[in-house]
Image (cartoon, rainbow, N blue to C red; front, side, top):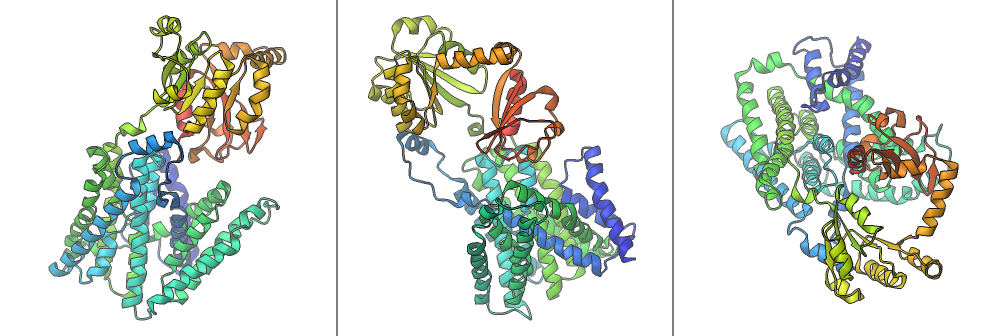
Length: 618
């Protein structure tokens, strides 16, 4: 019978995402659907799945693996202090930055959540809904990091300030309740040990981190196909930290979470993370979610008038605990987005399941109360993503175009500026020649400068750009301005040299400074050679319907995919992939990796969409 229940659960785990994809059911997160499927299969409705030792073991491993992967989701760069600006341009950008950082807003938001949750916990005790205010507060302050991350990924917001802020609030909503639960269990649990022993968990984590810090550098030099040492290390970290945590009286899920943090700090390759996700979300975690649903008996729960009262009361408490997030997000973001951020942070399921699991072990929660907490949490996971997806609109700071400033207006630079203006760039041109200003000002946005002296150009804010192109014919002046622009802090400086003698003297110096050099004779030579070897090159580069583009792959949705499986592969031609300092000639079976620079051909309209899709950090 044990094998039959396991087979049914594994079949449901396979069929559920297929059905969701078939009918495009994107409103609900997969985790919530899996819990609903568990309710369907359990004693609530069909009664074909029953808890047993095998399923309980796999389910417990699932929650441990889920907390491990949650620890790996924490982006510690969000906690870094703002660096003091090192260049004049960086200082200007910092001066124009919004007053409130994502870290400040997130910490303020979660402080409001914690205070609200404590008040609601004591209200529950005063009204007789739930006698333990501390446990209720821990449950109300939880946020489902997995659901928040999945929702932000769908909207491609993880690299945006709003997404970073919401993500950090959710991270705190998983970290702080986890530590609070551990302290709670240590104080009120019958087998709890001294709180200072919890320090041993972090001491052990530090020892493991120092011991395995060089692991992935060494890992790159050995055969991985049969050893899979990175996965073995992950399981070693998980169960070492779980055993240590339980030995000192803490919860095993705390050890698993800390193990995930250690693994993240070790900086594994993207392949490692992908395979760990595959093991967790492909096997253990779906069993945990489905068994959480199968463990509910709605017939019994809903037959109790007390439970029917508890469900809406707990649901309201989940929402009210997150109400303060709206006012904190309004310090920087639009009203609609502040509401959307509050809504998605009201979604909670993962930590609720973990807390209830511990509470049941401690026998401080009844079956009816546990079921009401869980059902109310499921409702938040339905409502939160729905309100977020309908309420979010792009912030003005996210729609800002890349700024490109050209110095020098001539037959080479003006056509380029005209074409880029139609794309995702904000173009401004500068010249010190009045005749050129009069000739081209009607065609592009040109500013007339009194001179090209370095200090004067800087004072006119010419270097306040993402990209500065020195297209002047005077090689010496281009050289001086290029060095000044780089010293000013411009990220990309492109300089034109038509005098080969000047270029030979200064090319190495400019390249060491990170300045990109352009020379027409060299380009013409390369073009002529390409025409001989590949006759269609000129047609490709000059075609009005297609051109060559480049994009760095940052969207993890497309990493570790074969080129032939890309949804837009029929609309582009990928000619080269630049990876780890080398060119890779692609085939349909070539697998894309994170940070690959993909060189492809397509129409301008298609290129804009693909560069946006692949280039967004997700």
